[in-house]
Image 1: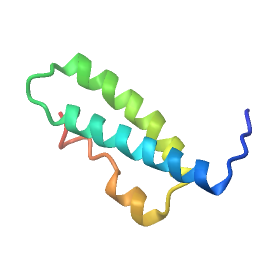
Image 2 (image 1 turned 45 degrees about the vertical axis):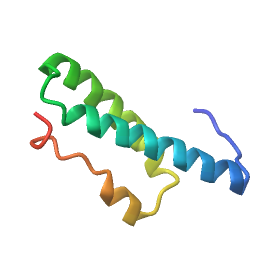
Image 3 (image 1 turned 90 degrees about the horizontal axis):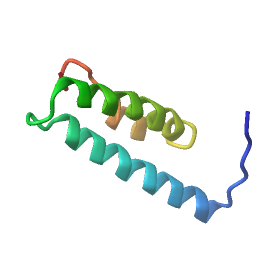
Length: 73
């Protein structure tokens, strides 16, 4: 296990970067042109980034990014 220390400004920046990455992946998962294998890979990555985001985000922010798998199949 690794541990990192962030100051407040760095924490806000990390929060921003993770939110933008989650937004992009949600957009990609909603694209009907992508096949199942690609969506499966994106979903796997989404879960990893979401767990990282969950460590620094408020419950209100987390609820916005909770993945409903049925929606993105």
